[in-house]
Each structure stands twice: as structure tokens, then as C-alpha cells.
Image (cartoon, rainbow, N blue to C red):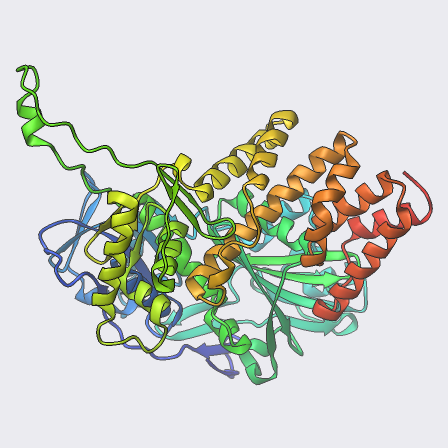
Length: 609
């Protein structure tokens, strides 16, 4: 984006990057236009790369998608049938499974100034179509900055003191410190015409200068300046969290001096994780970009943006973590809402019902017991299945990590052969699938664009683990600690070591194992806190000793281990554990432990219970 200061208009204008307008379809080649196809619908504006990258990923995974940009509405022929929640777009019938709308404003539509009714009608249609889908993103209402800050403060999350006013001078005089921040009440910018934004940058000002500001004809935010050590941009994606450390010389640097901004991928401190999850739950968000300041007293919440961009931050940090998490989120939501194929009918058996006829019995599928939470093990009817070829084992592992979901053929080929698959890759894949089918029965099916392995919870340890973990955490939230403890312990005991260590480095496996590991750590943290409440400190140490060494920045884990050490009369070791955590956080993130953990340290140091 380029910026300039207009002489007599708004303080600043920005020009959005140009893009090619038009609908973008990514559908199976053999799909019939007359058949309503379950489809992801993305709506944004040309020139933004987030959805372009997301749609390419969906194509790789075999997920049908349609992208509509605000500049292309003149080319749309659309009909929405509320009877079956289907859409017909330019002659193609689809059923939206997931909709995601970003930066789709009336002013982004061509000729909106001369025809505001037309522009508002298109935006209304996109918004209402979004809510017809089984899942719509970002989810929740559009929460303004003032309400965000009020909600956060009520939730016990620290926020800067904030005044909304048309008299910034009077407001500045009421705030502590020698500096203040002046910024817009709602969006920083408003689209005055397609591709052009006008508004004000957030600005840090000396309090003395701010006290000389004139009255304004529009309300704005005047906020205390919080001294801080680190600024964090935190992305929330339906439970997954990705965090970036942002270094910039001023609030407006991202727009005015982007080259001076540094971005690096970091792990979020526990207080930030907790705050983000609480606010996302409160606002019913599936997606949001949160801004925090890290101080020695803990995190300070600034704002959340449900339209927040992520590709710029990724490009600065040299990663694609948010894009991959967004892709996994949309794919999962699509899989949940796409209709499942109807079961095949045994016509001969149906015709013999009630006639006394003796149809041949259906073959009994062998019982499966598959395990991925450790080394790969598959047993059929109690007998260990031996899979000698590494690629066949890897294929089995990938399908078992995504049970009851289709894994795209292209994605399987990439995982098995990397960037240079042989010309016979598809044929070789079919050979490996056939081998697995011979050993695992008819659980593996081809769905037109990929393969799916069906498994019941009692057939796969990963499904049992997820079920026990979810049920145990739910019981704890309801206050049934004893029952929760049993389920959480059962879930943790399913873990037999690092899952699928032989396939470390395969991105598809690493991503799934990362999600499993996060849930495993959370289960152990919940379990440890419940055990400590019951005075069972030795049991807690037995389990947490190794975990704390492998995950030194997990504050909940460290807090439980410190409490258990004190309970076993080993207070000096608890203090040493805190110092190890502090050194790790300072060296990796440049921040101190949370106030909660520092308070615990002081209490242990002074012998207070």
C-alpha cells in the first residue's frame, strides 16, 4: 500500500494493491453443473492474497471452492434457494458448507458512490448467504474497539485506560504518563472509493502536545501509552493459535515504513493464550487477529480484528503457519458439513426380507486395533499387521491421522515422494492402497479426489484419545473433578511416546502430531491441577518431570511442577524450575514469566503456603 497526505481532506489516504477481478472456481473436473456440489465460498476483494493462497491449498486437498471478490459482482448471475440452502452462481449449483467473508464492504464495489443501494444490496446478499452455510467465518458479531476493551477488562484482562472523545486535549490531560496514543474508534480507514482508503494512523504523542489538540468533528480514541518490552500479533483459528513478535518504531510503521518492521514467529506466553481463548469464546469467534503488548506485569490487550490480514506477517517472518492453520480449519469445517455418501443397498437381501429366503450372509469385517500415539501399530483380529515398505507405512499413518476424512491424492503423493514424484506416482500409490486394503479390509475407499480410511473410536487410539480428552475437560468445567480425573488419566495413558517418530519431517504428519501434542499437554496440565487439589504431589512429579524438560516454556506445566515440588518438601528445586523458565522466556521471547508465576515464586521464596 502507498500513502500520502492530502492537502485538505482526511489526514491520510492509502491505495490498495491492484488485483485481477473475477470469480475463481476450484472444482473437480468431472463434477456435473446440475448437481448441487458441497463447496467452500470465500468473499473478499481483488488484490488481497490471503484467500488466493487458501484457495490454492483447498484445491490441493480436493476441497471444492468458489472465491468472489467485491469488484466482480457485475459479472455475477446468482440465485439463492432457501428451501435447500443452495446457490446457483453463473449456472453452477453449489451448497455452501463454509463461508468466509473478509474486507467485503459496499465501498469496494464499483460505482458504489452513484448507486449506494446496489452496493448495499450486494453486501447484504453476501452477508446473508454467509449465514446460510453450516459454518460461517469469522463467526460472531462485529465487536467495536470500545466494547472489546470493556469486555476484556470485565474478563480480568489488563487493558490501557481509554477515553472516547471529540476533545482529545481534555482526554489527554486525564491520562497517566507523559505520552498518549490517538487512534480511530472503529476502522483505521474507510474505503472512499474502490481501492482508496482514507482515515488516520494510530499515533504516539507527547502528552503536552496532545493537550494542545483542537476539538474534532468525529469521536476518536485517546489511550494511555503502555511501556512494553514486546508487541505480539496473535492469530486465533478455531482453537489453534499462531503468534508473531512485531518490532516497529511507531504504530503507523506498518503502513508508512514497512521495511523498518521486523516480524518473527514465536510461541505465545501462557497468559496470552488464556486471554485469547477467553475472548474468542466470549465473542464466538472462529477467526481473529489479536494485538497484545507484553510488559513485566503481564500482557495488555489492545484490540482484535476479525478481518485481520496474515500474509504480510508471514512473508516478513518467512513462514506460512497461519495459512496452513487456516487451510486445516476450513478443510475440517467443510468435512464436518459436507454430506456423507449414502450407504450401498444390498438389493438381493432387501428382496428376500419376509420371504423366508436365505440370502448369503454378508462378510464380517475383521476387527481393527490401530495405534498412532507412539510407533505405528495395526492389528487385525488380534494379529499384528506387518507392512514392510516404508511408503506403505507412511500412507497408513497419514490416513490414520485423518480418520473418516478424505486425504487428497495430490497431498498423499507430495507426502510420499516430496517435490519430485516419479511419473508412476499415482500408479504406485494405488499399489500401496491395494496392499493396505488387503490387510485392513474395506475401510479404505476412493472418493473421487482422494482416499478415506473409516475407523470407529474403539478401532483407533487417536479417536479414543480425542474423545476421552474432550469428555474429561468438559466434566472438569462442569465441576465433576473426580470423574474428569479418571477420563483425563485414561486419555494420557494412551500416549506411548512421540507419535510416529519415524516419519518426522513429513509436513502432513508433523502438522497432525503437533495438534495431538498440544492436546496431550493440555490434558496433562488439567490432570495435574486436579491431582494437586487432592494432595497427590508425588504422582504429579512422576508424570511432569520429563514433560517440563521437553516443554520448558509451558507456564501451566511449570506451575504444577513447582507446586508439586513444594508439596514434596523440595522448595529449592521449585525455585530452580522458575529460574530455568525465566531464562528461557527472556532468551527466546524477551519477556518475563507471568505475574501469576512470579507471585508463586515469591511465596515459595518467603515460605508462604
